[in-house]
Length: 289
Ligand code: CP
Image 1: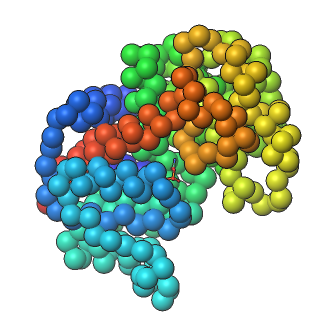
Image 2: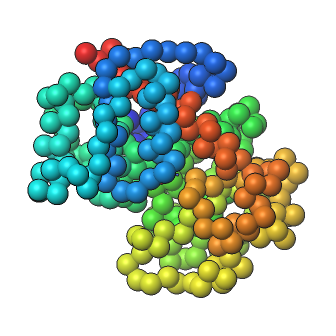
Image 3: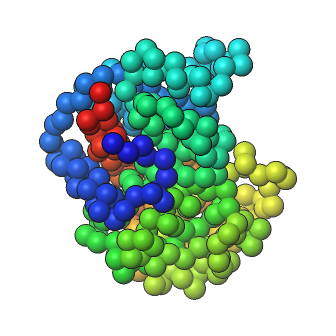
């Protein structure tokens, strides 16, 4: 069974299989997996870690606790040796979030299933899958939709995972950000001109912790130039939805009043994360002994 490290290795067929299983879990289907899993989070997380734990519990898995601050990582143990230790004691899958981009390259040869919970500014495949699931749930398709991703593109693993997968599934993806945060993408700073033709407005968190220099913008200026304000929300298509992977800087990327507005699917995304992660765990673990 495959590890899930990046959206780049997933075919459309595999993505649609995971979405179908997630929908079955959402509609009450149960599944039971055997064995123990560990969530190895070396960067902070609320949603990803908690929803993996919820998914693991619903699948009947044993979840072994791991806290970096009380682990032998503090004695200098490498990530490879930590994962090999999990494998040696009988763990079947590890979910890893790590600040190093492509940390998983150093884990080649490990037999335990590896699910990437986010690698630096690299990839966040389960976030992308839950985003695609949420969009598909709304529109019944991905092909032909216009998705506008707004914000800190260069530092965002969510943007990178979604850009590749959404385009592969036939969506038209636009990127809006300050020129300094374009990374490898063709971007514009003209958010207003795209709003009337966009089906999904996906706002990204400004990732202050990944910026080498102090913030380019004050919060007020960023909100005015790139944030989803109430005035911009009024320019959106009637059927368009608002997404954000969260955590949210309220009043910066998005007006506080819009976080839970009718168009917002932000908390729905979080709820969907549990079903999608159940599907991913099943996919990665089934058949492993
Ligand atoms: N969206 C997301 O990855 O949130 P957390 O950092 O809280 O896991």
